[in-house]
Image 1 (cartoon, rainbow, N blue to C red):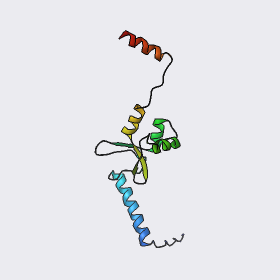
Image 2 (image 1 turned 90 degrees about the horizontal axis):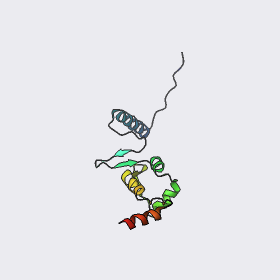
Image 3 (image 1 turned 60 degrees about the horizontal axis):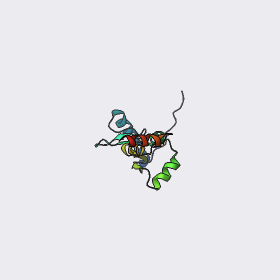
Length: 118
């Protein structure tokens, strides 16, 4: 038979921390506490928060560029959710919708023709 190793006693703080984390895991399994996976949450008012990777994927810019735009006031600022940051989805969608459209060849001619027809 193998001899059992004696477990060292936990300090009261360590024991409390272990109990809290075990209780959190049980509540997460029951759906009482949201899982700490990517930040995607809906508020009571229907506001959806998106994580940094999702935001960067949607807009196609690097984070240093986003940071520069945020400091200049040209991009929606992030919100703090616990220890994470997130962005309000509707603000990101509004920013994308407000981007200027690319001009194409012949746009000036088309505008002149439609203006003359009026």
